[in-house]
Image (cartoon, rainbow, N blue to C red; front, top):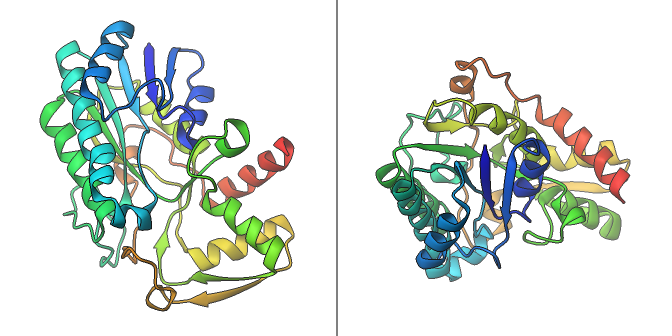
Length: 289
């Protein structure tokens, strides 16, 4: 297939290029394709005529999104709308990556694809709007919800938002020797290389619709950080703190675990545990250093 990938310098965009390298790839950075520009979207897609667009572009600095709602909605809602309209008109399949932040985090069990969303911050609200627009405008779509992404793109391409959570904790642990991390936000941290492998399998099917894909298991950010330091051999103190006491600008869903049962109905092997993914990421990160 001929695949156009937006956000090609981000974590997932980089790993998708590695995983899908047997296909004809058209990687597009923000400079090459600004998805908020409807005319540019139409021009670029018409010029390349891909079989599929994989949209990994997003504005996901969650606290910053609270201060810049117009930018947040432009990238996370209107951008997917522009892609959906052009894809529908040109007969292109659209893959759009969304987030567990579309849920309110009050559940006791993992969220499945049929559970009712209810975002609690600007970022989640904009991402949910993007989901609705993709569903309404582009019949041939895969809508992928995932969580807590981290990958190697910072070392490889200089893109993204600066540090993923793992890299930030490594930096702070080495520099400070003591970090405070929220202990009541639960999720399944997901290694982008693992997500890319599963996406590569999914897009070979015509099973359009909404899919939850994360690494297996769940943990708090506190436990995630302790595991990072254990594997990395960093002797740092990790202090647990509640979300309320931490006082971030944007509200977060306290429980953001996604149920992956549906993807297994296609015969696609579930992702390995988050601990296994983290261990491989750290080893590859050291190899790239």
